[in-house]
Amino acid sequence: MNCKLNDSIRAASLQLAEINESFERSTINRPGMKEQVIKLISALRRALYPEIFGGELNDRRFLATAISASLSEAAMLLHELICAVMPGTCEDEAGRLVCSFIDGISQTANLLRTDVSAAYDGDPAAKSEEEIMLAYPSFEAVSIYRLAHSLYELKVPLLPRMMTEYAHQLTGIDIHPGAKIGRWFFIDHGTGVVIGETCVIGEHVKLYQGVTLGARSFELDDNGNPVKGIKRHPDIGNRVVIYAGATILGGETVIGDDCVIGGNVWITRSVPAGSFVYYGGTETKVK
Image (cartoon, rainbow, N blue to C red):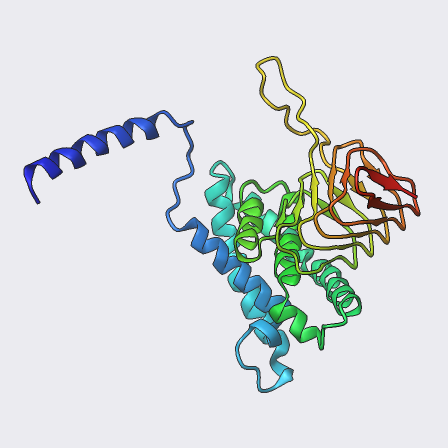
């Protein structure tokens, strides 16, 4: 290594150190956190579906034992991660959060059961529920979202977003863990779907690829920065179908029950229940 390269490395190191010093101070210092989150997701999915994502199970009499082992692993990982992202949290509080999450996991499993049924019933190409769980990006993204949403509801920071962004990397489906999504939810194909933090989606809703449920604009504070914590994304009613490429924006936008939203439309105002919205060549039309 020549002297010039040594000088370059030394100069770049000082510059990078200065840049890092300028970041907002944080007590979180956890190399490998992303990998731990992926391990947590894997352990939880093995607990939810040991015969799909777990190891070989020769005797179903040991099913509960296999589930217990995966839940124990997940609980230890989650406790460690909560302590990392909430460094002021005592052991008892971290333990309480883990217990609350584990207590609710059967409810998450019941929700996911309806999502699998919605996918099977809604896609004529689906040959089995196992195919949906192993091959469909919708199930990959929605199952991780449902787990992350439970942590989000417990006000655990950072981890829910890391979980759903991992699903986003895998599937191209971007669901914010803060979104509220009802039962029997299915995303067909899935690539490019975006569901924002304050979006509320009813039951029996089906989305196709490229759908955006986003914010129309951001309210700004006195310093010109976006105001956080306000309603920014639309509400979608029950039994709504939204076709590919549709964009629905705004916190005051409500899509009523039993609507069909055609492909490639742009919607920034509410749509009455039972409407069919489509692109008529020069404008979006409602009938």
